[in-house]
Length: 232
Image 1 (cartoon, rainbow, N blue to C red):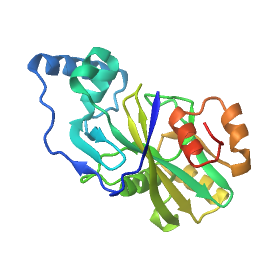
Image 2: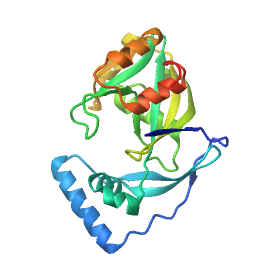
Image 3: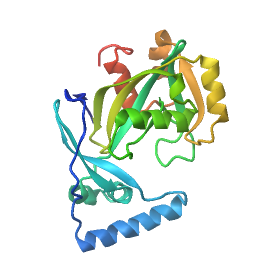
Image 4: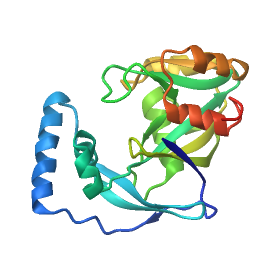
């Protein structure tokens, strides 16, 4: 279930520096689940994320959290009521002259493998949390475009996924490069996030979302908010 929120009027994210306290027996369970997950995905590492603790039209409050806690509650849903991790993430709506940019998630991803999504996307982990800086970092890492190609970035909406617990900040990203330059940049990047990217002309978005082999729900919601897919 997706819930849409307006971008806060202040345009700011407030950080509560206090991490949630975890009982020793819960920590033991978290560590065991994390070790199991690392055996399945050897490249995983436990880093910083921000968990949303308050979300209204005027306020977005987060607390620092460990990634392993989120993984643990995904693997054992009974932990979700205890850990209450809601990771803050960004999802860009990149528009070049020819259309909107999508990426097909590679098989090396732990979630939504083979699905199409708006690019770039990723968990907010910069300190202090800054969605614009984060989405520009993801843009560089995932499709190889640096800030010189960006004309404008603007957060415009927040999508709360009640099923996954992830809270995505949608960001408009206007770029000055052509479709062919985007493909070339992605080909030369070392990222394994997307095995292919595709630029979809705005008039073709409805058909692409309908006919593509899976488009993630958050991307669909952001396109609806932008008015590209009509009313929901």
